[in-house]
Length: 371
Ligand SMILES: *Cc1c(COP(=O)(O)O)cnc(C)c1O
Image (cartoon, rainbow, N blue to C red; front, side, top):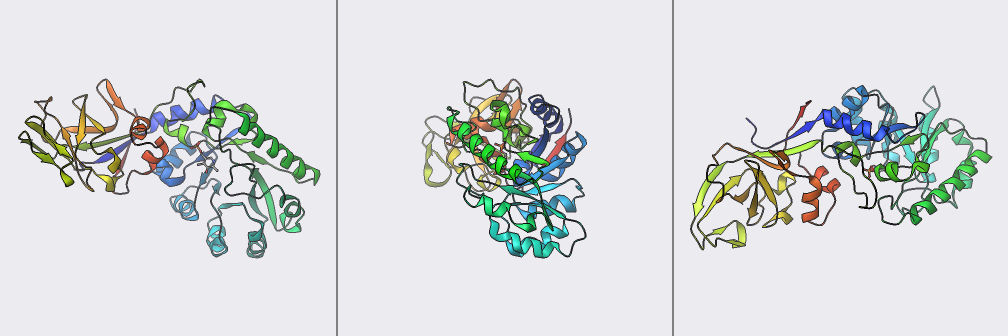
């Protein structure tokens, strides 16, 4: 018996994928972003499920994430979005992972390693058009595009950029980034380099900027059922994929004036029945939810009282007299007619659903269901 677990609904995942493809023209494909353990959902099962649904390409942040997917039998192309270090090249190639080159200084080492391979090795180039993070600057681009090693033994399979403000209120910055990206594409085409793959759009841009779709889009958060679009944009009808649940471990009543958890931050104003739940910040349930968050018990909201501990939280169930030890508690997800989304939890603690989802700890098992 596992008291604390996440359930991952693969039917909801398929629904969200079809919401995404609904925005795309037939020639534009999905490069599914499954970094950070598929935003906490379990990268191996998510990637295999998406592959069965027709997704042909995947992206992760780190080399190790890519190796994990290869070792789990995923044969599709896997793009490593994060920075590549020279010391990683051997493993990268051994696992047939596709690097994103964001800094020209890695190219000679890549080319040298590739010479041992029979066929040309494909890479993607990333340009920085305003994110101010990884990427080749527009200034250094021409010299890199002229490099002979990008014709052989390397081969540019794709070019990409990343949008900084696709979910912002104002679209002006995104339009400027897209303008810079088009100028970069022109530089590539002037040199007669063919580009099978061009990709820019994250989830928000899929919805808001059809002109950013190119040949691939890179959805992450929308696959998992959330978005951060401004209220003025008509959002897709996504379904949250993950539910986080636990089980009541103990019930006790403390007298008026009694306190709960470390540092006595909760003082009972009435005799208070508390339920002790075996989940804490080590499971990714943020300590900032202390005296602030809610859980669902019997389809009703029960408030978290006192500080969130590493392995436990306490909730006030005074108004739910029939609760029993062993009852299921929902921290994220639906119970009866009530639900708590990762976006609501995020809002309580001043963050975004991404952080709530990918923060769910490694000791929380993920169970997969199809409904
Ligand atoms: C994480 C990431 C994405 C996915 O972004 P979402 O907002 O989750 O859709 C796309 N591209 C890059 C480069 C990323 O790092």
